[in-house]
Image 1 (cartoon, rainbow, N blue to C red):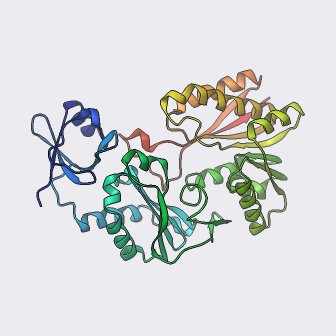
Image 2: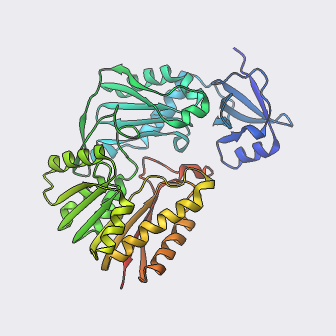
Image 3: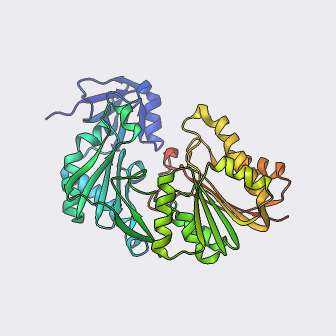
Amino acid sequence: MTQAQVTITRRGAERVRGGHLWIYRSDVRDTGEAEGGAVVRVRDERGRAAGQALYSSRSEIALRLLTARDEAIDREWWRARLHAAAARREGIEREAGAFRLVYSEGDLLPSLIVDRYADVLVLQTLSQGTDALKGLFVELLAEEFAPRSIVERNDVRVRGLEGLPLQAGVLRGEEPGELEVAQHGVRFRVAPLGGQKTGAFLDQRENHLAARRYARGRALDCFTFNGGFALSIAGVCESVTGLDISSEAVAASRRNAELNGASNVEFREANVFDALHEMESAGERFDTVVLDPPAFAKNRASVPAAARGYKEINLRALKMLSAGGHLVTCTCSYHMTEPLFLEVLADAARDAHRRVQLVERRVQAQDHPVLLGVPETLYLKCVVLRVLD
């Protein structure tokens, strides 16, 4: 079967040759006979080959580059890409029972996510192209990794931009239910077909370890979700309080605390903004504070409002920290760049009248690799600050 050919502008071709994998619809000149979800050949306006890509008929990201080479994109090509992604993560399973096996563009498999929870794989196909190949991916994952179950968590908003339905369920094997995984010695109960993301947030795993290096004394973990930071630092702290607005998250955190025998940790249901204001007004003090909020900036237009939100919570935290205490503060908003985030933190420190050292700058875990040339693959920023006085 002859592949359709899509022609792109010079700007689009330069973007790809600069290392990016996306070509926007505004840089597409002619789609020819291309159908949504197909693998197409891409050429520039002068007829020069730019590679092969997944084509979307609905998204503003019209093309997602798979390869710059003239090669067959067949079953074995996909198998080799999956195998290479797994090989890059060799050894992670010895320290973490849950991790990201495939990170879309970061692993040169755009719009494909595969997370591993023990012997269960969770699949997300986030474009027309990967969704059309979902059956193939299930077969290859079963052949390569022999999981007990393969499920899909395709109930995410981005699929709507592709004209795809939102759905979740078992694709192969048995319904996994709830299972236990461990990360660096901390045990968690997760439900791959429940909760947020694909059952848990996996991108902070290594930042949990970093927080453990600095934590001490009385600690506060805000936006705790399933208690990841709180339980990771509990062993080096006198006490830890975890806050989350979700009653389900608080209940899950309490179950995880019991699972780990963490008797010095308590979890409370609370609006973090209100709780920080009340605790700061009451003169409470902490030696360690963790801020891991959801993404405040969903798009570029929301950055100013997001910056105000980040400043408020960091300002409150800095006011409550004892001298020598540490703040572990995060943003998972791609549009909140590290320079802007550091500027927000500097403003918060100035208004809190605290002298603060920047101790460490971190990003997402290594199983969420950043692909140079595709800045969107770097979204999580984690900063460790020390209050001097």
